[in-house]
Length: 393
Ligand code: PMP
Image (tube, rainbow, N blue to C red; front, side, top):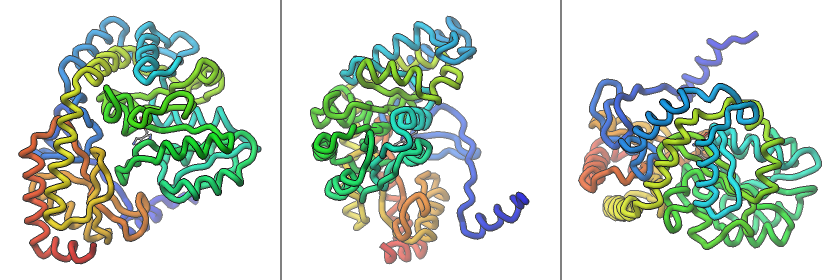
C-alpha cells in the first residue's frame, strides 16, 4: 500500500529524483539562484521579454483594472475584455480567423486533442512530441500511432493505418533536440490521407517567421495547411498561458467541448494585458530575432571549434550531445561549480545513450556571455571530468 518512501528510494538509486533550485529576481541571463550569481542558459525566454519593464507595467495596470484573479471560468464570468482583445490580437498575429486562450500549453493540448478525437478515431504522432501531446493522445481514447522522429515516410505508413477522424500531431520545434519539423511534407501527407495537421509551436511562436509569426509562417504555411495551431505565451512572449488558433468552427467547437477550457478558472485578465504588450514588442522589435540568430551562430561556431557534437538545430535550443548520463551530469555539475547553469537532459526524457547538455539562448544574452560559456566548457572538457565526457561522445 503506497510505500512512497520505497518508491522514492528506488528513484533516487536510479538517479531519477529531481530537485528544484530557488531563483531570485526577474528572468534573465544573470540571476541569483540558490543564493549565488549564476549565468544561465536554460530558460525559454527566447526574446528576453520575461523581465521587460513595459510588460511588468502592463501587468500592474491590468491588475488594478481587473483585480488579481479572474474569479471564474471563461464561460461563467471570467472572460474579460482584455482576454477577448488578446484572442483577437493573437488570431491576427498568426493570420487565422479566431484564437482561444487556455491557461497553459499543457491544458491547450489535452483539451483540444481530446475534444477533436475519441474512440474510433486516430492520432498519429512524432515519437519526440512533447509530453503534453503524447498525453493528449492517450487521454483522447483514439487509436495511437507513433512515427519515427521527423520521418515523413514513417508518418505516411502510420497514417495509412489510421481510422476515423485523424489528427497528425507534431511539435513545430522539438523541445529537447531543437530541430524543426518537416512541416511542408507533413502538410502533404496529412492532406493526402484526409487527416488534420495540428502543430504545437510552443518554441516557434515569437522566434520564427516574419515578425515571429511562428514555424508554419517560416515555411509560408497557414490555415489551409494546418487547421489547428497551438502556441504558448510562457516562452518567447515572456508571460504565461497558451492559445489555439484556427477557423471559426474550430474555436466555437472548442469553447463548448474542450474540458480543460470549460472546467478551469480563466487566466488572470492582467496576464492578458501583459501579453498584449509582449506581443507588440515581439512583433515590432525585429532586433531581438536578429540578435538571437547571431548568438546561435556564435555558439555553434565556438562549439564546433571545440570538437563538440552539436545537433542539427538552427533554433535557440542548442543541445550538445554527451551520450552517457553520468558524464552529462558531471559536466553540468562542473559548469554549475563555475557559476553557469546548463541542464543535463537524461533518459527517460531522451533516449538511452543520448544524454545531452541542453543550452538555450535568449536575445537578452550578451555575446561575451556565450564566449564565457564556451571558454568554461573548454576548461571543463580539458579537466579529468570533461575528458572522460568527451571520450563518451
Ligand atoms: N508544448 C511544448 C512543445 C512545450 O515545450 C511545452 C512546455 N515545456 C508545452 C507544450 C507546455 O506549455 P506550458 O508550459 O504552457 O504548459
